[in-house]
Amino acid sequence: MRGVYLEAGVLQVRDDLPMLSPREGEALVRVHTAGICATDIELLRGYVPGFRGIPGHEFVGTVAAHPDLAWVGRRVVGEITIACGECAMCRRGLRKHCLQRRVLGLRGHDGAFAEYLTLPAENLHPVPDEISDEVAVFTEPLAAALQVLETGAIGPADRVLVLGDGKLGLLVAQAVALAGSETFVLGHHPERWHILRGRGIIPMHDPGGLQGLADVVIECTGRPEGIQEALRLVRPQGAVILKSTFAGVHPLNLSEAVVKEARLIGSRCGPFAPALRLLARRQVEVEALIEAVYPLTQAEEAFARAGRRGALKVLLRITCV
Image 1 (tube, rainbow, N blue to C red):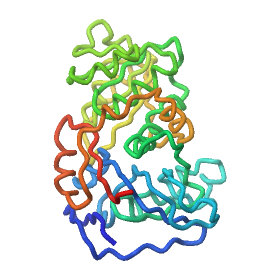
Image 2 (image 1 turned 60 degrees about the vertical axis):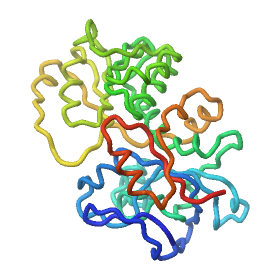
Image 3 (image 1 turned 120 degrees about the vertical axis):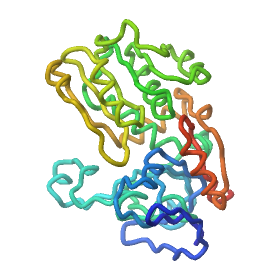
Image 4 (image 1 turned 90 degrees about the vertical axis):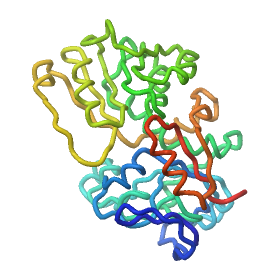
């Protein structure tokens, strides 16, 4: 099997990877297209110490084998957390926080940058015919963006400031605006701001009169110092929602959080079903976020491009359909 293999920070395209065999209850998926996420770039920098295997967790593909034969041949996307179903977190319904969890392409389970992947059958979601592969591959990151609305921190009367106008910030801002909140984006790429203005979102270079007055600040910069900036911009007793993941640690002065009585809320994986509905209805713009598409054989060049500062989404075409 051909795929991308990462070990000790070194990325290789290999043709000798063993063909996968699904476990009981798992499906085998032939991958069409996969997206390179900022977290994949951070894997190269040591985000998961000792990572060895096939990365990648944003994908769309066709079911090649499934416990229910009716699923074979269907186009699918898949939730990335593989839960044990038995631990204390799973019993509380918090499967994505399973104490024994594996995570597609990140933790104990080979990922989507290969011709095939396996996932529990229950993780799969069918893709409506009206959604192209290039759009469907955004299901996982859009679901993660929608998760900010599940925190309970954002109300329709709130003034929400999104830090960062990269691919994650652009998705998060669109999700927040759909919920009716007054939405602002602080960024440095005005060539992208037509995506925001078309949805009633206000982009800005400088926070100006918003400094210290935003009810909610959502940190999507991908930089460790973004958290400190978010604390500076949020109002007293406001909320800061953290979306960025990165390797290493960064000094953080939490005095401002204490003085402001600000809430810090982490947010990661989110709901796939509403993400697919929004994509099918074209209520979120994702195609404008695609910067380049590379064949699997050029994965090293694709990663280099995706790792450039300010890069938008880079896709890998895994198999032709």
